[in-house]
Image (cartoon, rainbow, N blue to C red; front, side, top):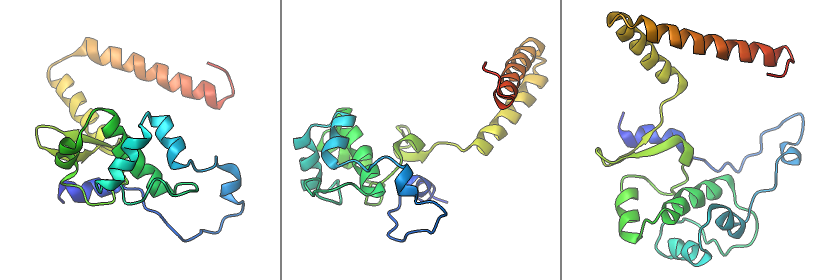
Length: 171
């Protein structure tokens, strides 16, 4: 699996199909933001948002009225945050060159690997647990009893905290 295939897990797909539910989900969700409101939220200058569209980094025109779809919101957030961080057109071209358009990725699920010059998906909980298991094996091999005891104390504290919350006791 290539890095691009893996990063697709972070893409936000726009679905035009409604899925039947017992309750109308839209009634319980905050309204979708407009492009202008989202730009204000992420600190992106409005003129910069328009330029991102003109330069081909946004697949939709932010001047369009109405709320953004989930994919548009993810796309404007992902590309807009890069612009807010100081990426100019040259840097955007370099950073986004390996990603398929539209750039509707969940920014909190990906990172840019500077050494590999590619976007990577952050590890899932199962992968992190595998690394933890490997680390525990190393600590045992190194006979790191003090560190293992500190870890046990932190785990016991976390388990106690969650048990108290489930029992309705405030921590």
